[in-house]
Image (cartoon, rainbow, N blue to C red; front, side, top):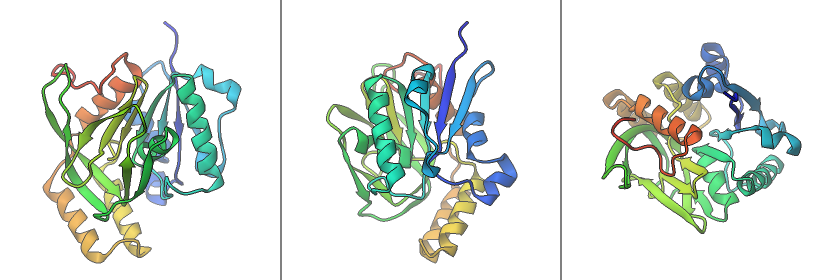
Length: 248
């Protein structure tokens, strides 16, 4: 059997909390998505570390992470990332985008992103997954931590998930690209630490922090189901995000 190879395109710096508990965000994503016999590489794209063009073909899939930056920004690394995503799209490479990754995929493919009119979304929220041939309807809860959102989907992209807060919680493009606005990789500790850091930096109000904390105390994300959705998309020949009863 040919060994599969994947890459995490890390779009944020590791927090001290995540480094201390997990060794960084890279091990968090590999812990969620990795399996025995696979190779996983890390590229810190927000720091300017990008794969070379001649390396792209050897990967079976790529994972785009969240970020403190705006997907609609024009930092040099963001523009370089948009260019890379266009190359990967032309190669029909599997790409899974999370939060910022979801938004930057939308931008790279010709859609629009920006600040959410309704403001920050912090806490646990229920996502309504649109009906597919495999499954009539499904609701899954997930951690949310974002103030930007997809405004307009790219031509040819399909919305596959929405919530009462955000109209495009998930989308897919053809059979090889999927974006998720929420954070299937988060633990409760990671989420609470991020809320504390946002509050210390005056990026959120105290009331927003309190509401976010209250929501994670009241609701528990369906982490195992999201793990199967993400792995099923990234590694399978599935054209929708694996919403079959046997998988969930």
